[in-house]
Image (tube, rainbow, N blue to C red; front, side, top):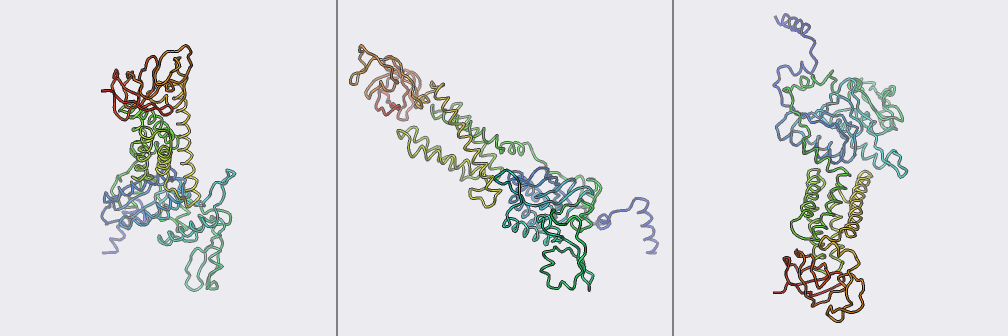
Length: 499
């Protein structure tokens, strides 16, 4: 009877089509919950941080299987290491690398860290050699120290996932040659590199075969899906994406955690050009606001720019509250220098330095780089911030030169004053000779004037026939009020309201 049942089952299988090995194994098992996360871009600090957030979201959803839909050329090594550790530590779920097209460089290493690798027949994986741009602008092989760390990371990951260690290392070391060795006594087969063969103690017990054609000298190991399965590097080949759910025994359609509009917005705000614009416009608007304090367009614009800057950095994983605190302290120092302490000294310089340091820290993943990639990334962030600050200084020069009518802003430059009589003592009595002097040079302590604009706390007053830019001790004074000059220091004229 059992033989009849077996024959009947084979007959039905022939009619319905031959099931795959995975379908036979999964037959009768309960369906699982799967979540797919696309990675269709290079691996950089921002894309890596977004992938971490999506991965944690998938875990929190209670998924049994997390599928990384990989089509990527790779990217930053240290970001790749972080993603590999994230996948290796996720022991509560099954992780699957689904490669439909290409998993190259860092993307191949990320695939290596997954529990299973499933590929299409023509998909490619490999070529994970680490390169760096030299001073001449050409890319070259990284130094031996960096290659050693990468090779050890790859060996450990391959061993943890039960994949051929020598082939995995060959992805990152072009100088290796990998061949298939067979044990003379047991018939065991395994892939061994030429370096391992030279250090093998029981070398006489093994037969050394021919080198693997994809793992010869002066090349990085790269194979398609079909060949990867033959070499034991990948777990299974499927014909198209529709077979993925059946192979994994998950409910279909699988939930796909795609990038949202806010993710795309954050990604755009983290680009170098957007960072440059946010910093430059924010600083210019900030100076305009400090020149005429109060809730104005300058203040709102500056608040919007820097809010977007730090928000995008928070979500991008490069900023925390320390950077915001340093930025706020810088603003306080500048405000103290602008309104309290005459001249331009320690408070102003310190405030500018704090702001620049906070912006650089918020743009980069660390101030103390450990690798060439981190050093290059930090250098790019510093150049972006300094470039924006230089643009701000140029804009400030033109504002002070051509838009000096903005209250307080005209104090940043020396302008010819109106024709006025030569003053004698503390008065403005008329004389026979006049000189063209800056208006603030015609004012002395004790002079009385009328506010020509609101003082908030800076603005304009009229003394006789001249208009002077002044600042109060912090009070707001309306237009048309009588004020007295209590102090003059350079271009800074301080007044007080008369009761």
